[in-house]
Length: 313
Image (cartoon, rainbow, N blue to C red; front, top):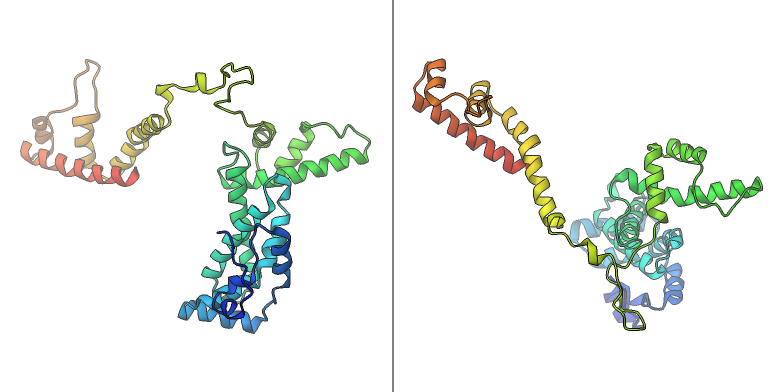
């Protein structure tokens, strides 16, 4: 959400607190204005937070956000090393700040600055992971932690190497450094090496533009097209595999012993001669009921399994 409010009109500033903040297009003016915003006392912060929580007072929400813009500016500076525009980092941090203000409970005994810190960092982290590489480099929580710690730890190792008069131009990690990172971040050494490879690899243009001589450029797009590996088809195939294994197992576990055996005999059992399991009449004879009763149990069991599989999918 770009903050494009710049009017100096006092009445407008009262009706719209954002009017006091310059556009993020003028970054230096924005940062200067954010640092001049008055900080709230504990009593003021709680009063505004209760107005927002009870009365949905948007003016109170604006004052809570404005008083913490300097926090976003401060946090965003920590992520300038990823090569992304400072204004974009601030903008994403402001989104996190607004989310924090919306969810803030003044009765929890915590200042907004402490509560908002998590939301601001989370939003900036998400933005960096989406934009630092065309292909995602981190998806799980452990991978995200590794991603944001790997750079700083490598810098620390380089400093140690420099102090020991070693080769500071080395880009790869030594086995000892990999083990140290893995131990400190509580991940496997293989995960450290994989993340290092992901971060050091550059982006490749899939469909390059023609050369200056007018010749058609040859890029990965020329040989990547494969209908058998089309993403949607692969996802559907994976879902079918999961349902055919884990899903069926979960559905069968939800049946009573008799219903499960009937389903397994009727639908899942294959003998050596490729014949199926027991017939309705054979099962009826074994359980001492009619074949129609076995069929009813089978229908009910299949219906229950279908519901389980739908929820599992």
